[in-house]
Image 1 (cartoon, rainbow, N blue to C red):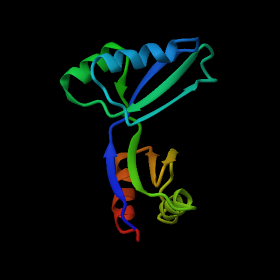
Image 2 (tube, rainbow, N blue to C red):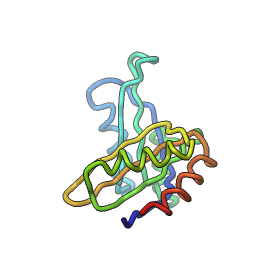
Image 3 (tube, rainbow, N blue to C red):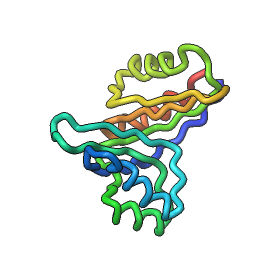
Image 4 (cartoon, rainbow, N blue to C red):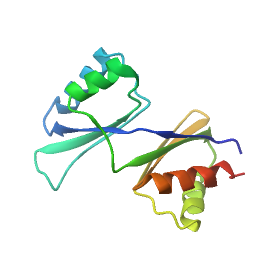
Length: 141
């Protein structure tokens, strides 16, 4: 099975938990020409009234400047590995199990299938774990 595997920088920002809070952040990125491939947003129950948004990619000086101005920071405690492949039943579970069998703990996983393609973002707590996962997944057949 052919897997397209890359490490990606994730950018995060806090958002007000109110109508338009997320849209405001995304609009700032769009105005700078950012074309997001991945976005996930949620409330932060430990901090009522607030939420968080994670996005990727942010590339180039103009985009980085706009992201920082909008309150985004490159996540330092989160490493992400993007895996794209032809979609097959159980693919996410199989890849997750291979990572687990190698003793690598996942921080999180997001994925989606569109048409015949699937894309997963595996999140790890350290660069070392992300690097190990990349080496492992590149051997996946």
